[in-house]
Image (cartoon, rainbow, N blue to C red):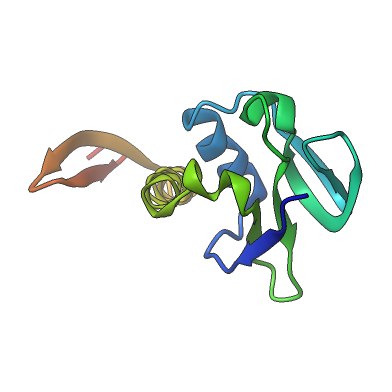
Length: 135
């Protein structure tokens, strides 16, 4: 039975987190207002609970569920089994964070009435420019 680790994160917007997970290849993601139990690789219910869940059948053959639990401060901490940490490693979480931040930025820009002007990679970093509508 693989143990789970909880990883602190910056994710606060559930919809943007789900959209970022979709871009990471997880198109089937559960969301729950009340945290529910994660499942281990045998289908056993674990004591760890999460509000955003990618079930093990979408993670990989012998995998456990991947979860994100909403904390009191409003952030979602990742819950990853030790077994799955080779797949969900630092690079994977860095890519997820970049996609998440892009989603949050786009959402905030839209709220402010801005439209996308350009999106390009400069020195390995994504640079996005917005313009006010009508400008």
